[in-house]
Picture (cartoon, rainbow, N blue to C red):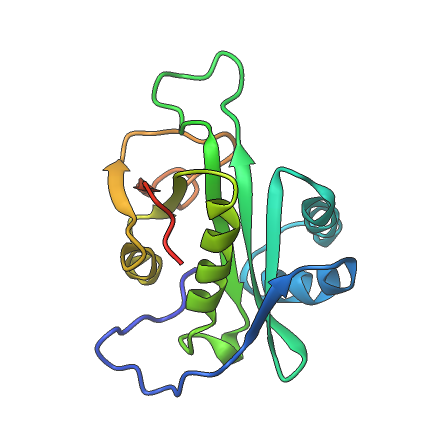
Length: 179
């Protein structure tokens, strides 16, 4: 579920985190943040996070506060599967899964992770994509300030559902990733 979001009342002081590419040593910290928010198999998630570090089709970044991982975000090259429906999300680089430890939410780490990932994509492509649940206003607001615009609400992405299939997803595109 989404963290409480009240854009009009940001009483938390922004913090200066350090954003860098993730290493194997960051997997357990990222897994802890992920498992505090989502159910699922820790072993499968640990393996997937490890694969992200090794893959050329993934960018994986962490945000540190006081030398400890406080959040992470990924970029992934998504390729439509063979025989995909016409409304499949197109081939491209996608900003995927920013997660921030609940102690550090709404303090600028999501912004910092987004800027780092956009800079990374800018070296590889002229556009970047992302999708979100229509109810995740925090994510929509975050990405809109970097030039993301809604493309459609009628799309599919392999393995992705929104609210277990009952929610609405929105596909967004940014034609020129901005740092």
